[in-house]
Length: 183
Image 1: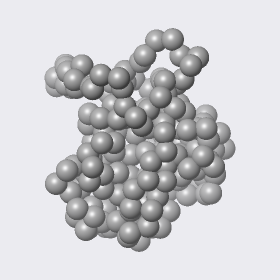
Image 2 (image 1 turned 90 degrees about the vertical axis):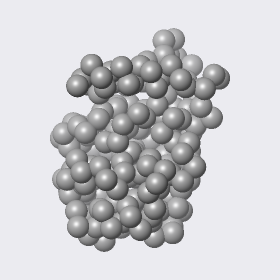
Image 3 (image 1 turned 30 degrees about the vertical axis):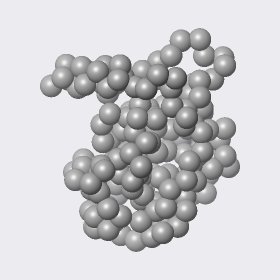
């Protein structure tokens, strides 16, 4: 199973468009490009360009905001592990208060805002500090090198990726946020 996942990641990476993504830029201090796999949690030194999406309630959400560290969670309304993890991740994010931000983005092209809201509502209620959005353009997953739902990317205040995981324990996400400066 893991070999199939690694193969999928390698194939998806090889099919990335030439010239890279307009949403990512390589840090000038990074000489070698790195590619994350399911168990790769090293910093990649990629600066994430800001993007804006309407959340499921119609509010525009910009990430990275440039004001604080945060986490992007790539999901889908049918990602059971993502939904199960949501209450624990919400509790972890509440520990940071306004010192960290989060955005959970569906990368399923068949998802709608109402489907995503309905899937996550039993897990997080009406938590306004846990925004949910659907990437209708389909550009974010390839731009961030995301090939699986459950992928989490933690970035620092400057918008640099500092950690990446897939369906990781919430404690690891919290530790990465502290490393990113949210403590």
